[in-house]
Length: 474
View 1: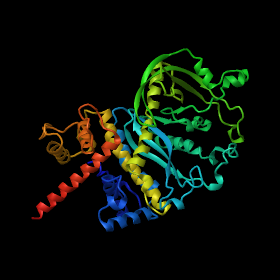
View 2: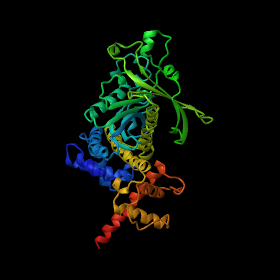
View 3: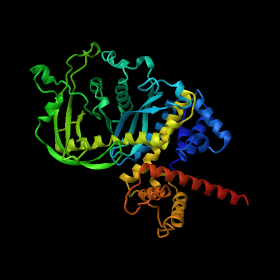
View 4: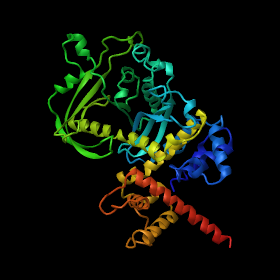
């Protein structure tokens, strides 16, 4: 099933040793089936556990090479399978807190000297419906204790010397990677931290765009020409006539609950201007872009109304284009879910690896596992009627699943199967093994229920394969 993607990893890996390439593939498969278990529990044989630690420690292995093998194995296949040639590159940063673990003492700080860990910055590619495709880039770092509390002093340093430069680098990497793929439409999507003037000024081809939520009420070129009293960015778009009203589905980041939000839409074209540029900014152009305001009305009691001001390089000349822009921004939630699966599903912050090199390699591999776990679930939601074979599930695997469900969970389901089930039916049946109780009333399971079901399903597959081997030897 999806786990044998490890074969593709091994084939495309360039770790300088065929044995290391093979180990990368087999290790992916072993950890995929038990991603939320500690390594000694996920890897059954003691010798293989030691080999796993040696693999993560090997100097020939790096997070960059692991990710490179993943991109080589996945990206072309994913792009060829798209129904339309449009992808989103969603970027975000999360904290990984290793305070109290074996490896925590060797790491730098987070926001306080006693909090040891890493910041992980990821670029995740998805299709235009938000179904994950692959991880394009990851970068991790920590802070030195002496650097804490010095943000004001570093305010006027060149952008290249700031942590925020990771957003500019991430967009530049995306531009370089897809510069010649003019048959694709590529859109970079990021939250308020990416509201960086230098990012808007990057030289990019016309098929690559950005969509960034505004954090700063920036000065407009018109302000520089007419004086200080001229409206700035936020006031300028708010003064535009109402273009229309739409409802979008949004997710509460605290409890993951979804709701419908009624949004008033306004938009206009603007040109930005720096009021007090740093020396390294004086030669930067005044970029022209579009801003879309999505303001919630009639928000439920006790919930802070949504107010998004979205900056984009794509033309927003019609209400339909503005609504598409807002919908695309809601898909930024996909990377939040990726971080959730990485932390809660793969339990990455519980890893007991003493050396930072080991830890970073493990984070890279678990990131691929978390992404592919999400890919199955999201594919079922967006393309529910596709055959289960579309995600690489063999006849033997789905037959075993439905046989088990009929015997143990639901005697009335159809079995034997006359044709392959849909991918949505497969996902719901797997989730039943993880405790999904409302199959008839709730359309899709949550990620936690799904990965619990996947773990039990893999155990079932392994037991069945072992039984077949034992019977074959008699």
